Every structure is written in structure tokens, then in C-alpha cells.
Image 1: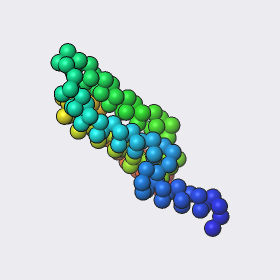
Image 2: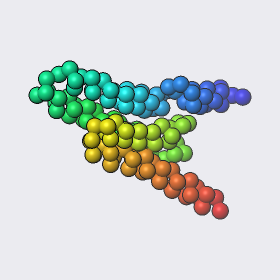
Image 3: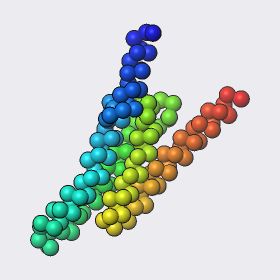
Image 4: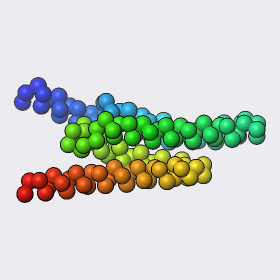
Length: 137
């Protein structure tokens, strides 16, 4: 086994377990920080005066949009499944997880964008796999 193969195996194992490395790590951290933060937002909204509750809510909603834009940015850097690091397609599809915090807050742009994002990633993957099978015939 050459050094390149050993590094590729190590990267694949790191991407599969834990937080991974590179873009996998960034996407997983985005998800792990962005989703549970909805509970912190609820706590802050309880503590702040009523006049500031809408501002707290709008800041978190902007954060959800920022997280989804981060997913789109990573997708733009790695548009083809064949050139992505291992498990990046799965991590890209996990952006659909922002549906739940959006639903909890009644943030309809997030309720539309998050599942649409996951569907988009799945469709692009399916199209690429189908094209790859047709090219080998």
C-alpha cells in the first residue's frame, strides 16, 4: 500500500466517524452548532424584555439562512460527487435538518429551503450516478 492510499483510507475513516476533516468537519459543526441553538434562543427570549424578542428571533433566523448558505458554498466548491471527499454528499444532505428548528420557530423560509436543499442534493447525486452508469455502456 502506498502513502497516498493509506492517507485516503485514513481520511475516509475520519470522515465516517466523529467530526471528520476538511469540509465534512465544517458542515457537521455547522449542523451541531446551528440546530441545538434553537433551545438557547428560546431561553434568551424568555429572559429578554418583550420589546427585544423579535430581534433575538430575527438574529437566529438569519443564522439559519447563513448555515444553509454555507452548505450551498461547500456544494459549489465540490459540485461533482466523484470529486468530493468521502461522505461529503451525506453531510451536504444533512442541511435538511434545519427544517426542525425552522418549524419550531415558524420560520417559513427555512421550512421550505431546508427540505428543498436535501432534495436538491439527492437529485443531483441520482442524476450523476445515472449519467455515470449510462457512460459506461
